[in-house]
Image (cartoon, helix red, strand yellow):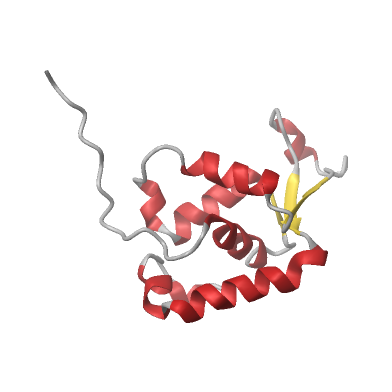
Length: 129
């Protein structure tokens, strides 16, 4: 019987938690607010592991956004028609009340193992970490 072999990424899994990856996406955006699709795009662009990662990573992102108090859902302004083209349109931002915790967590991960933090990045010098 034929068994489907999983695709193995040539890139290592990022040395960050999903909440850190989401925070990096938000910190590196122009407005500090992104849609879920834009967060996915950020991760795919800057962390190539996710291009061939096993299914489920997008669920992990949504799960973290919904349950982690460090992130806040932002009501969509009616003046932004492009956001209304999708079924569920909302923006996400770092909760200002938790910004210090987010910064501290990113710093902790960065200091724990600096090489693992940048190994999985496509262009480490291009990100505000």
